[in-house]
Amino acid sequence: MPRPALARARRLVVKVGTGTLTDAAGRFDRENCARLSAELARVAAGRRLVLVSSGAVALGAERLGLVRTRGRPWDIATKQACAAVGQPHLMAAWGEALGARGLQVAQVLLTAEDLASRKRFLNARRTFQQLLERGVVPVVNENDTVAVEEIKVGDNDTLAALVAGCVEADLVAMLTDVEGLYDRDPRERGAVLFHEVERVTAEVERLAGGAGSERSTGGMITKVKAARRLGAQGVVTALLSGRRPGALAALLAGERVGTVFAAAARRLSARDGWLSAAAKGKGLILVDAGARRAIEEKGKSLLPSGVKGVHGQFGVGDPVEIAVEAARPFARGLAGYGADDVRRLAGKKSAEIEATLGFRYTDEVVHRNDLVLLD
Ligand code: GLU
Image 1 (cartoon, rainbow, N blue to C red):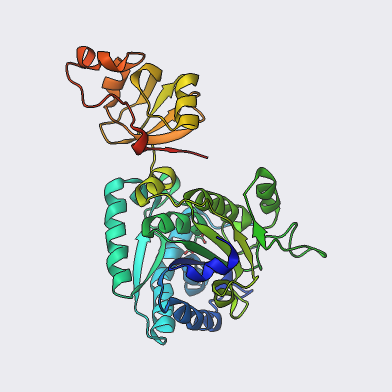
Image 2 (cartoon, protein in one colour):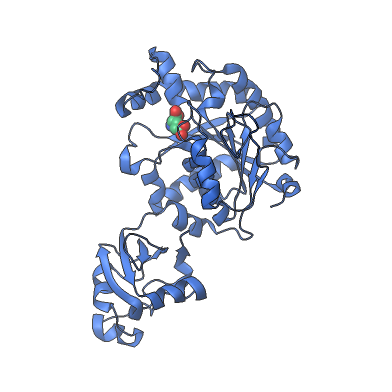
């Protein structure tokens, strides 16, 4: 989507980072929240808007009188307690500030595990749809009370990308404490801002690796990785300063602010987006190199003949990873047969399915329509 086309974005996810909502001392910045809300309200007119807001931990820490000592991060349980204290205050702040502009807010708390489950993902999607149809602004955050380790999304940049898939957004704007992606640490002299990034290459990720900020969880790298994933799904990502007045409106007017990451021309359907970004394989199917080529290069289904082995347990319709080497899956799809049946079908011809299992659902172990390539 070239810049002027951003004006056509109708479904918008705006991610607001902790650095945008707190001052240098880590205190909640009501003024910036109010200013942003005024801008968000203007942007929301004629568009569907979802906010992903951090700040619960910072607000909770402020309420609990905790001071962060340099270089000593709080442990997880402390952060969880802070988030639990801070979340209602965060919602109250948005409710008040957006309410003053005539917008109603709703709290949506999610975890990675919620979005990996097809059922919960669809439930969340339905809730989002209802809210958006009613002109309500969902304010999303990770459910930090229950989200630790493997069920944690981890940072709200990644959460924003998952939510974008769930609501079929066409643009994700990440508001942060710098103007966008620079060629080096933006605090260094002579740092140059990239206005457009065509493709998130390893080099772009390397650049992002260094430039962090103290108050945000992810720094730049999680934003750039989210942009890469969103781009593959056909969603444009923009990085913007959450402190520059009018930045969001300027972006939507096609002006040259922040960094815009280009996206694939074709947007994945919500289901394929879920498969590629949110779903987790319940098991893994090992395939031979021929099957990999057929899937990757020719867009073919996975047939029993290409199967070499199966890891884990899954049922019909469960998400599974597909790999030549177990550690590096190249595709994810919905299983056409359960794990034990796929084990028995490994290396067989499709014509032998019935004789092997005593029944036959389909010729494919994973149908091409139920399959996405992983980047
Ligand atoms: N959920 C955390 C919070 O609200 C933020 C995580 C993040 O900033 O990425 O404070």
